Amino acid sequence: MGLTIATLTLSHFRSHRAARLAFDGRPVAISGPNGAGKTNILEAVSLLSPGRGLRRAGSDELARKPESLGWKIRAETASPFHDLETFAEGATPRQVRIDGKPATQVALGRILRILWLVPAMDRLWIEAAEGRRRFLDRMTLSFAPDHADAVLAYEKAMRDRNRLLKDMVTDAHWYSALESQMAEAASQITSNRHHALNRIAAAQSGAETAFPAAALSLIGPEGHDTPKDLAPALADNRRRDMAAGRTLIGPHRADLSAVYTAKGVPADQCSTGEQKALLISLILSNARALAADLGTPPILLLDEVAAHLDQNRRAALYDEICALGAQALMTGTEPGLFDSLGARAQNVTVVEQGGLSKVTLT
Ligand SMILES: Nc1ncnc2c1ncn2[C@@H]1O[C@H](COP(=O)(O)OP(=O)(O)OP(=O)(O)O)[C@@H](O)[C@H]1O
Ligand SMILES: [Mg+2]
Image 1: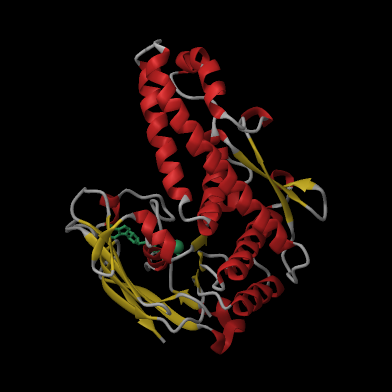
Image 2: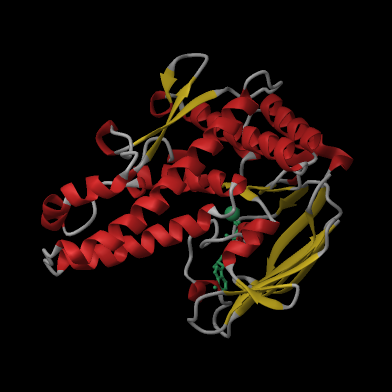
């Protein structure tokens, strides 16, 4: 077993006023009725990685209402020990402290690798590219924590370029520095993404798993890949981009395509259950690859995943998680969904009491 969360404390975070959980590294089965506060716990853990967490909520939404005083999540990790804190007061962006010192969100990603599946991702393969890109970047980040820096650098330069486009600036001089910054970040982003896809493909081949393999590839808008050297392409595209008021080419337009290998069918044409199975398969492959690369699997947040699987698939999922030794936090409305885990998991129940979540570790 690798790096895990040993204690988790939520203060004034959504429906939780003060919750403290102590974990021993086994998977955690969280059950309780609708609205009890189960997903809120997973969201709290997702905020121990860079970005806006599994609901993509703004910091102000996270503060417990009606007080809206600010919120705090604290986790202590085991082997090695770290004290991780993320918090916000009022509508300010969230802050991070690691071992008592102010730190960046990117630094969190160097400590904990966290992957998640939430019900909103059930339509990932059929909806807009943005969701798939986010899924791809979450996987990529798990292999290359510095990916977050490259994405931030790219987005910052692109925002500046988009401002020039909107202001109808035509002087090439204003563009060239920004476009080379974008090109440099873009080549890092694309190479990180390819690395992640290669590692996942390697982890799929020959794996003993009940979940279907998927062939993944990176495609650009209209099927074109991001140009190898983005700078000249951006320069060529200035007129078109100016008409659109934004940058139309680059890694921010990339898309992830998946084919259900055994059937040769694209993911968006698979059945609902098959699409879900592909996502689970990718998360598990990603986890196996990370375990091989780092000697420690990532933390998995699986929101309502058990409910959508038949009994055999569910048992297979639990077996694979246990074989990986991954700390998986899973939610379900019925404790019975986790029966086949038995003593291999810790059990947490969450109930709502007078507008507050009450959390019990059993
Ligand atoms: N900022 C907030 N302050 C107080 N309560 C909040 C806040 N944000 C969300 N909630 C409450 O948290 C509860 C939802 O919690 P959560 O989504 O974790 O439920 P759940 O146990 O996952 O339920 P389900 O089984 O339906 O998915 C809701 O009752 C919601 O009103
Ligand atoms: Mg929920």
